[in-house]
Length: 346
Image (cartoon, rainbow, N blue to C red; front, side, top):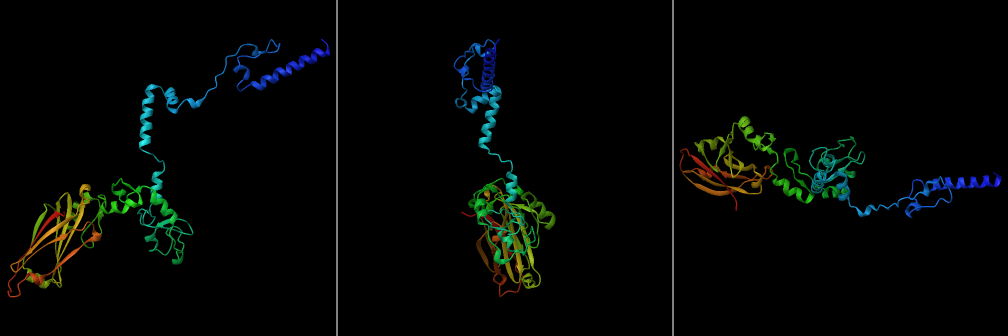
């Protein structure tokens, strides 16, 4: 073997290994065309006919067919049911964190609709009413100067578009509200915590515990019915003593799927009456009620209708002079009857 043959053999070997490196790990064009002639090399595996490689176009297959082939027919039914449930009920892994961040750090009420104040030092948020009642930031204790109290309008616009829980979610309400729905819903929400209607009592809690509280703490039992008659004997004497001692007559009635409290006071020669709807079923939360009154004595009879307040913030009082119920010509004792009938207002 002369030097020229050795050189050609080396060139063929280099050409062979170069082609192997060139076509390894990729679509071999020779395979796609049906084969490749080795050019005289008997050990070249490309001399054997190779099957054509079909180009796999994934765009021809949708996600359902791929999942169906992977899961099988039986598992596919469960997958489609889970997919449909996920589409109808959107899930968020950190929704509870978002709800917590949307509450005021002081009063724990939702920031939505209340105005938002952001501390310039730490950036934490409180509702605007709470920020006006403190001189220092509740989080970093930095002084809050009046001239630097600015509402965070960007955060207010963001929260206005989010569906956030009702402020009564701690008591069982599951409604999520945007800003335009919040005020109307929370005024009539049946899950609002009940406050004790009696003066100086700070109890508040769920509807189901109200009756037990009134009975144990104030010795007032719930009466079933939409009407009651309160009789005040020795009315003239009690009117004279009312300047020094106030007399109270408190009744709780259950009717129209709601609990009403009727309070009658004899104070400073005036007969004062207050009516309050404490709690009601959700279907009756939007209904308005009134108290049909008939106050009678041997001297005079008064009749009228008193609207019943929906909540403790809108309580209305009815004052009647005791002198108008007793005869100025008689000195005998009078007995006053107060008949109360609760009916829905049309």
